[in-house]
Length: 109
Length: 114
Image (cartoon, rainbow over all chains, first blue to last red; front, side, top):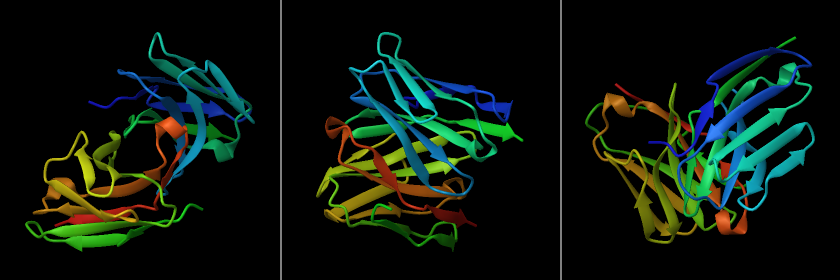
């Protein structure tokens, strides 16, 4: 089974609202990464949080990591229509890099 | 953009035929990965490589084989294509978790098995 599992599977919000996506995993990791995929395209890296970090920010993105619960969350603040995409967490247990099923985010303008 | 190229980008093949997809990188990254993406399943790891001639199975490796004879090339072979292998295939490269670096993805190969 997949290492990372995202929740919810789909999320629909209004422009300007915040979007929160969660990821759970099963084994020890070196780091956890979040990626974005626009329809029909390859994945693009958003942010990486190391296993010894608890929170990280990048622009409108905030990621938390709780290694005791084996979970992470991605918060996108002040969402925009252009944030509409699929978001994936990836757990890095080198050499393996395993992705979850993803969250489909739709931001309505 | 990271130097990673997948070929072909699109392919239609018949059931029972062998198919080889190629991933080529110019970044000299150690790790290379093959994933397949299907609706509702996200990206599932097929095989990965941690060096020349060093490969291992992922979670959905049945019916697939890989080879890495050079750092820059990672080949995925469908030994005898089946309709269940119709999918979008992505290659990724990385310097690895110990370096705490991101993975870079190719643009994908859309494979249809008829």
